[in-house]
Amino acid sequence: MFETIDNDICGGEARISPLVGRYAMLVPFLNPNYSREEVGVPMSATIIDGGEIAERLRAEITADAARFSAQYGYPPALGAVLAGDNPASEMYVRMKRRACEKAGITSVAHIMTAQSTQEEVEAAVSSLNEDPTVHGILVQLPLPAHIDEERVLRMVSLDKDVDGFHPLNIGLLAMKGREPLFTPATPTGCMKLLEEAGVQLAGANAVVIGRSNIVGMPLALMLIKANATVTVCHSRTRDIEEIVRRADVVIAAIGQPEYVKGDWLKAGAVVIDVGTNKVDDPNAEKGYRYVGDVEYESAKEVAGAITKVPGGVGPMTITMLLSNTMKAAWHIAGKVTL
Ligand code: GUN
Image (cartoon, rainbow, N blue to C red; front, side, top):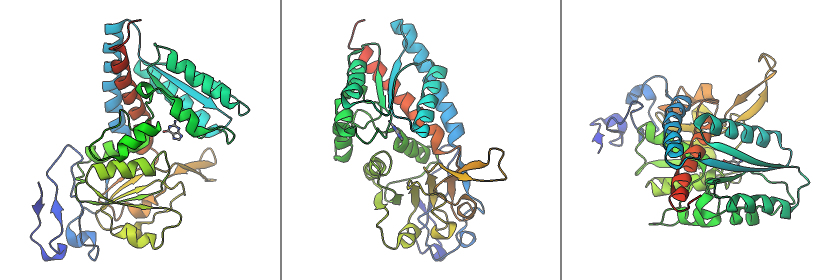
């Protein structure tokens, strides 16, 4: 698959990827002792444009939803459960519902207060489980602290678990030779971006920064399945900069603004930035702006390819949720008669 660069500078390690798609690039595997000029990596990183990729995929999903509606006489549908008053969660659920409607997927929502009881949240999930016109269920996380999240996620019908958070789906993701029905949206979006960019993961050193149930942990499992050598860094990791410096692929999902600096990166590394952090900015119209977990300005000078914030992983997350909802809809509609 790879053509080895016959060049001492690269220490015999550098390999060029076959050209795959329009984002194809020089895949790193470069010797970290040399600069990007010395090893022939382009001077500024290729931008992996999540907005553009998501838009293309959403057009396909919209066409798929129209085919579904024409075939069955009713639309595919996603049910959302939101409990609490977390403004970010409220915004995400609003965005997900709007994206559904634009794609021709009906959205139904159970919006509940922060005082909702365990029984009320479970009743909302049960009613979506039992509704044959609902194909996917999304329980927005985090739930209020007094709600037993594991119990709620365990209740979601496996057929409708479009967030992939049911413990059985996560367990299947962790096991060699097994496949879950659905995988969580944000890590799936990251994998899709890497695929679109033509990054060859087999044998690559991938470093995931963050170990959350929503992103870091499932993403590490997905990278292992793709035959990468995976290191997961977190708040207790020692010498994190040194670990990141050895990475061909860096995925930052730690939720700290501009945590990863350009001089932590190996020349030519591929960087996926999952963070969306609101920071004060008196020069911005609204007095704030969003930055990622990576210091973009310094990182783009070293990386071979990088995502931006906003416009990178964010649009992919909702797109993967819509894609999972269509998968669930075809699967369920094929089994039930309304
Ligand atoms: N909270 C933060 N990210 C997510 C997500 O992808 N799905 C759900 N359900 N909750 C989240």
